[in-house]
Picture (cartoon, rainbow, N blue to C red):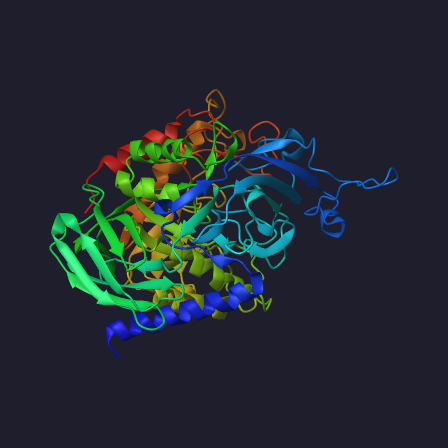
Length: 599
């Protein structure tokens, strides 16, 4: 089977999976490149009803009847209800919902017209689950708090006012992804943009235009149409390179692409992107696409065939100044500019796919992106629904960002445990599927089960057999004391032919805690955190095949499990910068380390 047949087979598998899961959840995987479509924004004020007693479903609050007799009354109404901004989380907008986990019902009335075109109701993300109603009819549901989805409403629109009601429920589920416990604030609501997208009756639904794995000049991709007239001529244009590539879709609306050129390759030093136009007989769409190669070769990571050392930082999707979910360009730029100032060439967007603009802004700024599924710690892999949910979230993550060259790593899990029933099989199957859908990026799992005894590490987890990177979290100096000198740490890595990446390390410190003992962890001092970082950097020199490091993390962030009333106050204090934007002593240690030339 040649490589084009393999690509085609992988895409068919992905489409069949999406169809199967869409049948379960009703929501459709969002069309590619929503930003370039003809659309009407539904952002702004939405009326809301909080539903802590979970009464909204049996009361059918998506139907608003009017009293017909003097004795009629109803125990719910959006009239007079408070309003929340969309996009935005509900926790930061209403004080009574500050730590709320449950259902909130949103309502928006929008004036529309029937058109000789197709129209879709698009959501950038709703955390965690969404039930969507249009003109009192249920369109369907979506599970997963960090990826886009859509519903076609072409035949459901009426001229005049149309009502959209969304039940957003961030209640934790035992078989959810993530599950019951995780170390960040569970911001709920319609957290990303909402809009109505208009397309021709047959439109360009999806496409992949990236360099073939290992190539610096050969594009290997595909186009997929959606509609009735599926057999059409396809033209891909890159005007700057004088490329006009022609092909034709088959009866299923699918066409393979393969063409070559001499590209100026995207890199952190030169984040070059090209204006790319895709046309068919009935539709046209444009994108800004960069071309680069990322691969591992033995113990090295190669960007555009050149070895690179990853200077990274972990980021949560939270604006620390606003104490809210990050969703706007200003929010994204605050976080990404802070990463650039630190000296980073990669951002690990933990522990879930961040908003689409975050990824695109990183690409424009020359920051590589590590994108991650929220398969975090205590996932119930033995539940029969969980593997299906994992595959669905994987498909949605890749579908959205596969044309973003800045995304160089798909991370499929974080801190899961090999003793968990069905964990190994579920994640190995997921890894194989990821590589079948997209072979152009590194794929990894982040592990924290390595042993540390007698000042030695043993790195052994079986998932590393299927990972391109040996990515590990270690908090020596904080959760685990040093057992000897950092410069004398010994390593036994069972995967000696792979690059090693320290994906998390660090310690907690309260900004300004300087007039307290700096040699005792209990005081959350900046000095203690600073020394942990100095010791870690000393230890890095002992790590075989080390090709990158990634402190935990950029800013202090909110987490309900951080209960110390003096030093934490509901914050994970491992940030290099406080929630008020103040740089801790450890920030300067990493900044200086990243200034060093590392080959």
